[in-house]
Length: 199
Length: 241
Image 1 (tube, each protein chain N blue to C red):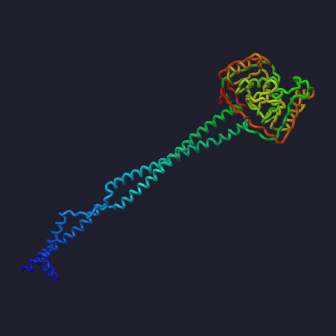
Image 2 (image 1 turned 135 degrees about the vertical axis):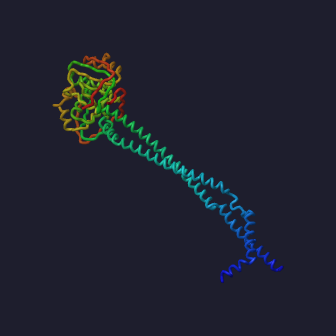
């Protein structure tokens, strides 16, 4: 009887121990899994480290791109400024060559007498000397290579001159000036003269 | 027969005892909190690491978006600069043509070289010396003969050039020039020679050559070179339309 009781007690204790061990093992495994979530600490650390490194590289790239953008913006501004300078130069030379019709303030010289070719040459020279920026004689634009030996240039002469009004007027009408020397003429001041392009 | 053996085993008291013991062991263990033997990573709190990952992931996305934006902006700037460059190319060609026409470039080609100098006679007269007026007359004739470019002592004659006497010198383009005067003209040399011949348009000069000894020579050449206008144009009152 005693042996039987001992036997039963032993079985009972063994069963408790087995139950203890089995459930402990199961709980440990679950706890460890919970502690590490779906990823491992090592994997997470590696991921964070890679993100940090990637972000550093991306930051460098952003800096480089911002620098490139700033330089391009400067290039555009410079080119835009260069284009504007180019436009101004073209306009200036279009005046010099008579390529385009021009307007401006100046004087109108009217001469109703015959002029010899040499007198006409001297007159135009004197007007240039007075600071004329653009001229037209009898409706024809005078530029560098305009020859004054032209059938258009006969009396009455109407010479339009664009430039500083007072300087032009004084130079033409002063004592000893060109009009005093070679021929009489009327000088009128105008705020806006229109000169045609050279043909 | 098997069924009987099965029931015989499970009717035994010790089987029941075993099962009860097993259950008891399980219950005790569950009640008793099972702890891990030690911390897996005591240095890096897991929650902080997860937060860092989220922060860096957001930053990574923001940086990637910023890069895409910058690349698009750079492309826009490149296109703008290119458009300006494309617009400037034909204008550069126009400018070069205008520079040539206005005297701002040197010119080479056939033409003639004229020398005008005072007479060597001992008692000079008004007719025996070379005047600014002579230069003006000669240049006017040269333009009429189709000259493309003209210089006097290497001073290019342009739209704003006046030729004036200043005591015993001549002022051209704000530069004083003295005799002998060398006029170079690029153009059809034969036509210019013919226009400047004795039967041409400068009979007055030839008369003074004959009577006063004024020096006037004409040299056609296949290869002449004239410099560009050395100054610039500045128009304050004139506006092209």
